Structure formats: structure tokens, C-alpha cells
Image 1 (spheres, one colour):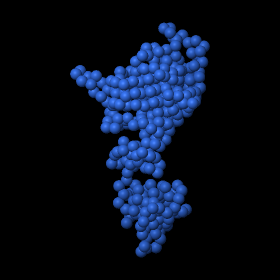
Image 2 (image 1 turned 120 degrees about the vertical axis):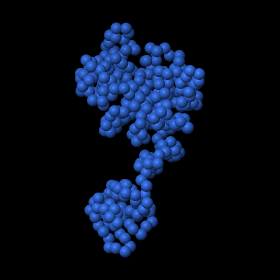
Image 3 (image 1 turned 90 degrees about the vertical axis):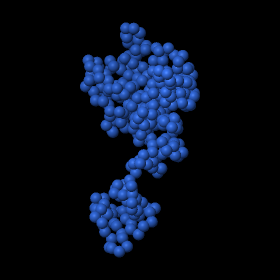
Image 4 (image 1 turned 180 degrees about the vertical axis):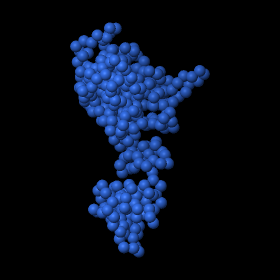
Length: 331
């Protein structure tokens, strides 16, 4: 059963300056549960890093309370807090002369004392972390030989070896190609389920967060922090309101964002399946709104081929979408 790991009450975050206080966000009230992946979204400069540092205990809060496992964060001593919270930062880990296993073992530092000697329990925790992330093949590799995605997996394993209830990650997909971004987000989602840890991360990968996250925190300079499942935020219209751009619109049908093409013509499009969807997408790119709900004298039938029907000319059949587009572009 999911348990409440973090409880935030009337939290205000920001900075103490020379003669004033700069408040980044205030009146934040939320809970974060175990076994869930929570993604923090927002534009650059909105305060995501400030919020993450405050929740991690790296930066003092301005007001309010942060309870972690029913204990206020300021009541934790540093060493004790390191057994409750682990943090994976955005910075690339440029380490030489150290294997992946040795780096992961540093996650046991809160438990090993001054000399850092690993007990059998520590070694078991390291091996368990390696297994959870499925990086047995990387265990003996030197860190400087790993790709960005492989290094990120090692850093996640290090956080798992630290054996904390909470894992915070700052932009864990920042330096990755798209397949690796998907793999990383799916890995974190799986780990939240398998370990029942609370995993909270900041990200700019909006589309992935909408599809994979259990909870979204959307941060905005005007609205503050809005929290909910991706689906509830879509139904309420809050997703569409937060990410307003002339070139982007929220698609209620898919629950995702798409490019807002400036369409000047409307054509009825009949058919179904992938060819229908690809024809609709391609026509939108050249400024034509095309779907089955459009009422127009010109219509396109999508079957094995694409047939264009116009009131005053014979039907035109083309085999592919390139040919379909040419029929309209050449007019």
C-alpha cells in the first residue's frame, strides 16, 4: 500500500538577499507518496531547481513545513538526512580511475563510518542496486568509458545503494537521446513500483512526463505549483493553460501537446487507421484542416490509396501522401 512519505504545509521558497527576501513560490501544500513517480515541470527560471534544493535540504525554506516520514526536515541532522534522502544531480560525473561498482559503493557512505570500509551488508546493498538497475554488464567498467545514459544509470544505482526512502533527481534525462530518455523514465517508473520508494524529479521532457508520471507538479510564476495526475490536469484544462504558446496547443483527444499549424483551408477526410492519421497530420502541415467532421465539397477517401473528390473534376487517385500533398500544393 502506498504511504505518505513527504508532507508539505504552506511552504514558501526563495532567497534571502541583502535587505530583502525574494520569494519564488509560496503556499505550497502537497503530499508525495511511496511507490510513485512524480515529475516537476515548468519553464526555465520559474524556480524548479530552488524547489528541488529546498525539498532536499540543500537550501533553507522561507516559511512552512516539510515533513519527511513525519519528521520536519530541519530536525534531521545532516548524517541522518543522508539516510532518508538521496539526490542525483544533473552534472555529468567525470570520474577517472574508478569502476562503476566503486562509485555505486560510495552510496553506502552514510553507513560505513570514517574509513569507508564496506561490510557484507554494504556489499549486498551495492549488488542489489546493480541488479535493480540491470547494469551487471557495467559493474567493472571504468566510469570515464561509459556513455551519458550508462553513467546516469550508475548514479541511480548509487542512490539506490544509499537505501533512502526518497530519491530526488534533477533533469535525469538532460544529456540523453530520445530512446535513452524513454528508457530512463521507464526505469525510474519501474523502480518506484518495485522498491516502493518516493521518486521525485524535475524535467523538461513534457511529453514523456505526461505519459509516464504518476503525479505532475506544474510550476508557474503566476499560478504557483499545481499538482495532480496528468489525466486530471488535462480534464480540468490546467495543462493547456500552463503551457501557452503560439506554436503549441494541447490536444484533448490524445492528452498530449502538438504543433499548432495555422490552417487556412478545410477538407473532409474519410477513412481510418494509420494512413488516415498520417494524411491528417501531413495536410495540417501545409495548412489544411482535414478530418471526418469537416463539412466541405472537396473530400478525400483513404483506402489502399488516396482519392480526392472535387465537384467539377474527375476523382484523382494517388498512391502515397507525397502525391496527395502535391495535388493541393500545385493548385
